[in-house]
Image: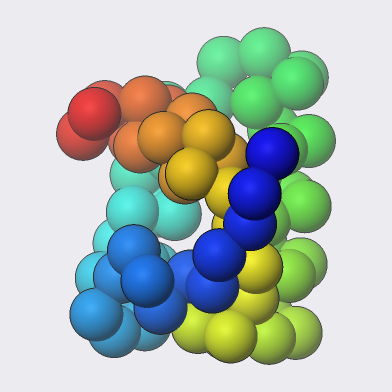
Length: 67
């Protein structure tokens, strides 16, 4: 699983924050919430410099119902 920086997927922080907020609203299972908590922790620590894989970003988009 290869990881790239979040900035490769999103142009700015507002765009990602909107996606993350929508994913939180769409989360159903405990696994979904754990995943979002992990992403949120990294987001708060690293911002657009955080690493995220293509599959993680796709999963986040599915949770946000934008995939």
